Length: 519
Image (tube, rainbow, N blue to C red; front, side, top):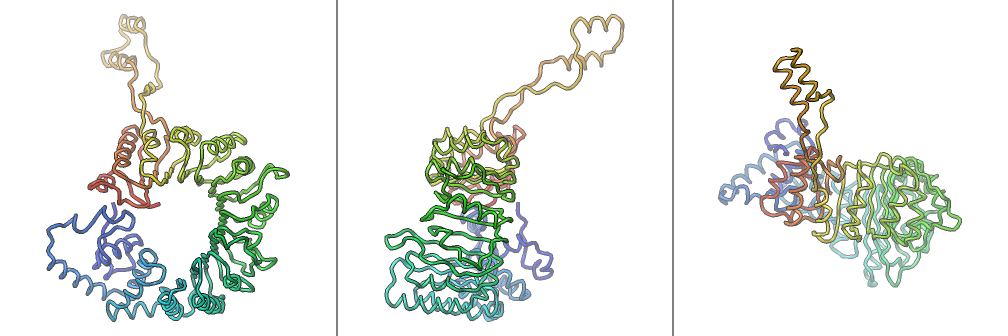
């Protein structure tokens, strides 16, 4: 259970406050009782203290604000930063609200440039004004850019977007990350990506939504950077994104390719992997790599630690699973598996033994296969310590949870000592070789073995992630947690994206038995 930290403690010795306690403080005491990890109704102010009067709340709020205003500037800025990164809308509206609370808060916000380095731009006038303010107040800090163009632009919106593209491109030397989301190109985003030198750019995300006006990206990207570490492309082919020169992949650690318009030939994919020797995370969603024909039988990625796969065509998925050789993978995530794709993946596990020798974590996201197929599928991963189940319906995981809660009676192994037959006992008694204590011990050793509970599925499981949650899911979780605790294979951590679906009192029951986290 998390330890509550008071404003008095932060004021007297802010350096001694752990980061997680500071986060709990800025949520629970500054912005209300909501726990960011648990959701809005697990622990609320009105549930904990329903009898507290409005006058006492006002007095406490005044005292708390007075105490907060006495915090060091660095501590108060750190609290604002945590709230900005977790609570704020992408357009910076929360920071503007914070700066209006008091003169003290305004001074801290304005004189902390790193709080304003996230630039979110769309074609609305309000968003453009806030983006301009953030760009000005961020000064020389590295910029995190988010540009979202609408499906259809009016003449005014197109003009406004064009001006902002030029303005952002002129600050390319400050880019740290860019996130582009658009439906059609209109030549504007292409201009932003052409002949752009961004020496500090580490993260790139480009999403091209499928629409009647969007085909292949008709431009060879001109981004030039040597420090790119994360690249995510959705709806954009990698061969169209990458420039002839200027984009180095030697520091690339994370690559995600999804819903590409043109599949990448397996030979080019292998060439790409050779240019990224430090690649640790790979996501291939859909028919990204073209397999079959002259495709190599092995795609070796020795440095890969996290792998995410989502099947497109069954043919491509089957050959890709067979070809991938990733001995260092610790985290595996599988999306939208049909029964056929589950069977194809299981076959690939026996293609090379062992396929994932040090696998620790498995995620099944939106499985379309029948629950019985999912349960039998999990038996192929007996040594995993973390399992995450994500689905659209809150009842989709019930059969799997029931399987995790299932136990059986197993005979307890006898101690490593020799037992005595009745004839041997009689002979020993006749010669007086043992006393009553020896006799009782011998009878105890000869007694039939006792039965104990034994877990049937995933004995080493310690962390379980389930989302969404509901009352029915909670009932199954109680069985899972209780049965596995009695059987000696306890669940230590429960994770979910939100805990809002739990019934009243469920949060307290869970916190007494497991640690709670977020997905």
